[in-house]
Image (tube, rainbow, N blue to C red):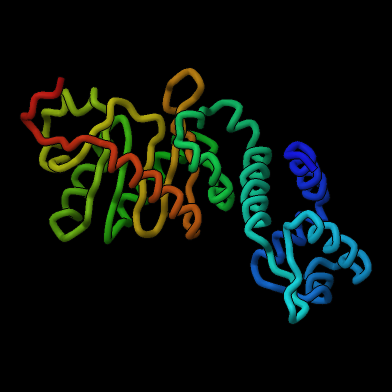
Length: 253
């Protein structure tokens, strides 16, 4: 079987909602056939048939104790399905917003944002972001085009009490930042440009993408679950490592 046939076979097996649900269920924990049937409200005969097909496609494997486990290929396929489902479910949003600038690994992991909550308007996004800042206690990591003025004083006060603050800004902001925000921004970093805004505390994270016309939309996604949080943390760390250090008074070309 050539590569195209192999891909077609796997995609065909995953096109079944029943088999996809079995894959997701087994990914949580190794299960016996009767446990899978009960969890998904299927007959044992139906479950057996789907498990056979998933096993032949090398997405699951049967262990010596009779339990079924997801294979490494199955894990990759499950991640793909989760990301694809998330994108299709929120198709209107992704038709308007550009994620192509993200590193491939983060596009591949978009499914980790699936439990996030979309803000339907800019005011809702602003108010929730403000609440995120005000309730941060241990750390606050931000990446954005501007420093929101209403966030400066509460953040500065928290920093004086031990809050870890990191900020990544575009080069244009680093060049002109010569106001009262400077003390807060000392030690921050800058990139030539940024394509996504991030706001992350120990409790919650927010991500905002640009529209296709290049404007930041301020219609973002908020999340508190571990996967959402880690996706945002990892993306921020990626850009933080690539960014240049910024200090007031240093000439930037």
